[in-house]
Structure formats: structure tokens, C-alpha cells
Image 1: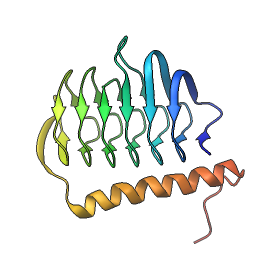
Image 2: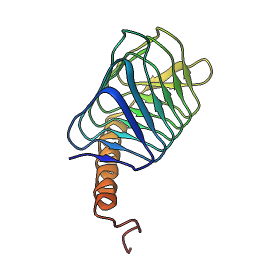
Image 3: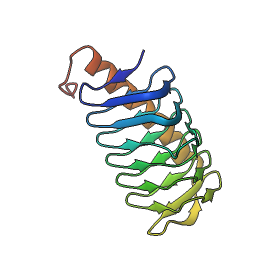
Image 4: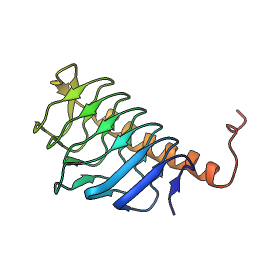
Length: 161
């Protein structure tokens, strides 16, 4: 089961694994090449996922793609956090366990090594993610799936604390 918000658009050859959530206003366009999205990945409000003609895009499992991000790359590895408003340009490849900071721009064709922290315009690797950060990325994906299940049941208010 997946959650695709009523205002989201999933078009063309897009394959969603189990537990994917596509949030309000997000667009996934598989009209130029196939897009695959791994289990428990969440594509947050207003993000755009698209690819170059004939260049497929694979997004791993337990990935969070933040609000208003533009994903136009070739690959995002498992357990990554793609920050709000970031831009991943054509042909870029993001290794497993990476953190792409909010507003960062990953250049066309860039190869980002696993567990890198990337910030800035243009994006530069400034460090490596810790084991704790990696665990947080997976936990964050799980929490988004829990919220998605509430939306599927029509429970839109946050739980009582």
C-alpha cells in the first residue's frame, strides 16, 4: 500500500515500492524515462521528480525528499535526506546515507560519495554523516509512513500528546 495525496501527480512509467508516500502538490513525471522509488520513501509537498530523456532515475528506500525539492538526477541511494528546496541536476548520483542540505544545488553529473554531507550553491561535500544521523534518516522515513497511514484513514489531525 502507498499514499498518494489527492493533489499529487504521478505520471508515466513510475514504480512505487511498498510504503511510499507522495505528498500534496508533489509531481513525479516518468514520461521521458522510468522512475523507481524504494520502500518507505517520502516525497514531500511540492517536490518535483523528473529525469532527462532516456535516463532513468532510481530513488532508494527510506529516503526523505524535502518540501519543494527538485530531483532531476540519476540515482539517490538508500537512507538519504534531501533537504527542502534543494536541486539535484541531471545525471547526478547521490550515494547511500547522504544528507543534501536545504537549498543546496548538486551540479549536473556530480557523483556524491556515500554518507556525504553536501551544502551550498554549488553543493560541496563538507563532511560525513554519523551513524546516529543515518539512523535518524531511517526513523524519519518510518514516521512519515505512519503519518501517511493516518491520512489514508482520514485522520488528518495530529495525535494527542
